[in-house]
Amino acid sequence: MFFTAAYGVDEKLNYFSANVNNASLCDYMKEKYIADCHEAFQKKRDESKYLITRLEKQLGIQNRTLAKISEDLQRDIEDIQKLSDEKRQQYQEKEEQLKAVVAGFEDEIEQRRNVMTSMDEEEQKLQEVKQVDLIDEDGNRLCLMANPADVATKYINLRGCYALVSVDPADTDSSGEATPLQVEVPQVSRPQAVEDFFASMGAPVKQQQVAH
Image (tube, rainbow, N blue to C red; front, side, top):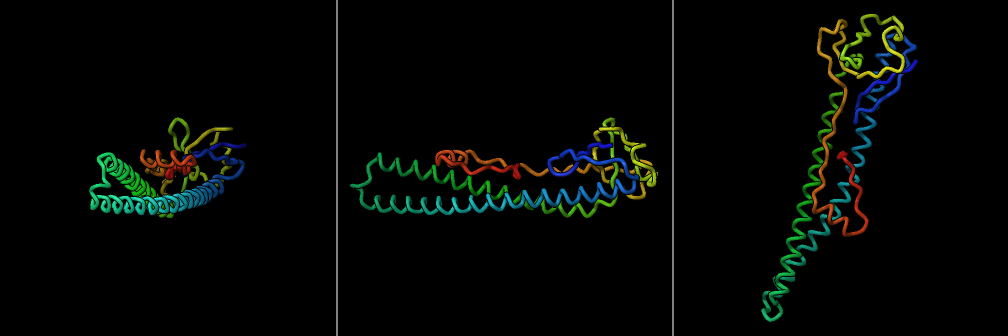
């Protein structure tokens, strides 16, 4: 007999067998929740590091290009005959465009670093989970550990869908607080200037929402 429980990063549905006693089931669900979260955090962390490296590389290129434009503009200003109004406008438009791209790269890099910090904080909270329980679709807590030796099939519906929650080990009658074990990772919003930049290159960098 199987049932599903929603928990973790991105609130995935996970299948469990109820053909065990309540104590064994709760221990296994807790261990799997922690292991799955560690794995999901590491995957998203690796994606963030990869994208930050790509973005920082492009940021360096754009900063050097911006510095070169400023040097060219200054050089031509010193030779008034070379600097027509049209050329001055071209310099200024390109400079403003690059400044927007640079600011966009800096913004996205900061967002992704903040997401990584947030994930580190959420991962630390995994240590606080001491006991778990299930809540059914009507919001009722099963209180599985009130009868730890009973087979879980007595309390869990066939193919039922439940939410995994963290509870105090001493709370076996649902009198205490039940904390949902769904982890929300902040979203990264790619600046339009960065989106347009990669689109103009014909091979945009994949935007992971761990950003997603």
